[in-house]
Length: 210
Image: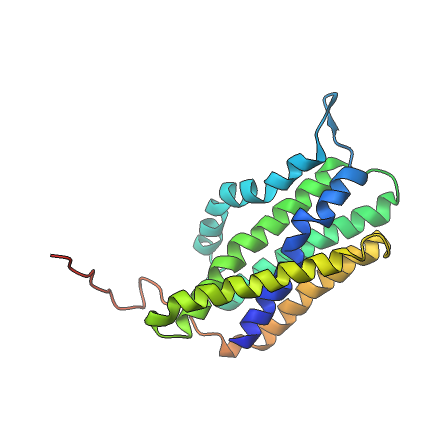
């Protein structure tokens, strides 16, 4: 359970950049003029929530195509998407230097970050629930959001290095953090419990309220 919570906090550090350094990237290092109209940098703050809503069917498709049919695969796909999200901006920072980069780089980063969120966040909650008795599932949800809050707090601490570190180094460090999570998941895959499915778990009866 502790390893799951540590990974959750680690991913929270990356997710927290969507409201922090990625907004600074949008304001300072992105070409935001589209068809002669400049898009305010604050507009991109709404992108993570919109993308999660729009891409929810993608999680179903990945499961249907058996790309994420196991707990290990789901965690690996989610954390790999998170790592690629940070790597995209690291590459853009390296290629363009102090010049503004194309808007496509930022959008690609947000999309990959959204893939990581829709795959990992629900799965971690289900995994924590499977480790405890049903009566304690509510407590596990609170523990999950507590670990995520710690990650967002650390995201702010990491963001303090934005004006100090070169931007390729900054985003490469975040990508390396997510890749480290991939290594941990791959090495601990034998301890991850399979989640119950409709085919494997006994059908539960609905309680009667008569």
